[in-house]
Amino acid sequence: MAMANFQINDQDSRTGLHPLKFSLWLIIISIIMMFAAFTSAYIVRREEGNWLEFELPTILLVNTIVIVLSSVTMQLAHNAAKNNNLGLLKVLLLLTLGLGTAFLIGQWYGWVDLVQNNIYFGGTGSNPSGSFLYVLTGVHGFHLITGLVFVAIVYFSSLKYKVHSKNMLRIQLCTVYWHFLGGLWVYLYIFLRINH
Image 1 (cartoon, rainbow, N blue to C red):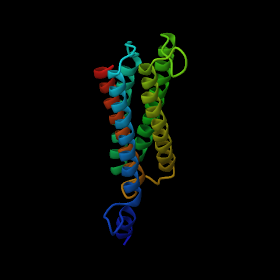
Image 2: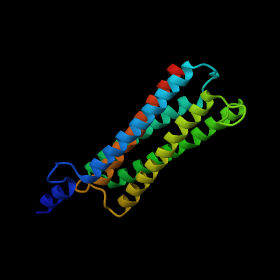
Image 3: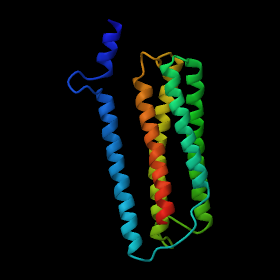
């Protein structure tokens, strides 16, 4: 009976997909469309000329490694929940939070590096190439903050023993979103390396 209730809670009987999972995929698709528009505009604007060439901050590579590691810790946390290893789950969620925070700090230092090299966002003396870099990294950073909030919610739920093998929805949603954010950053980094 308990298992039957869990299955009803885990998915909608009409679509076979939980409404929260459906909502998450809609959010992910809308973010993909937004970044597709940004990167398309980047390419079009670059071809128009008046494009300042400059070195990308080296911290972006470090951040790429950090976010990939955070994706690994998030997946391991998911696996720990699935195996009811609740102590390890909490440690791995904290590691994910720490790595995500380190990523944001790295982004801040990347912006500091840009400013020190006279690369600004908008206004007098700015160039579209710099502005695009601020927008791409800033909008991704905003979404990463939402991901960190999501991971924190799952962490505090795990402290109340609400995340385990029979209650996986929170961590499943969080893991999908976190992997998406990591994959999106890797795409942006490769895109910038190729097109910058």
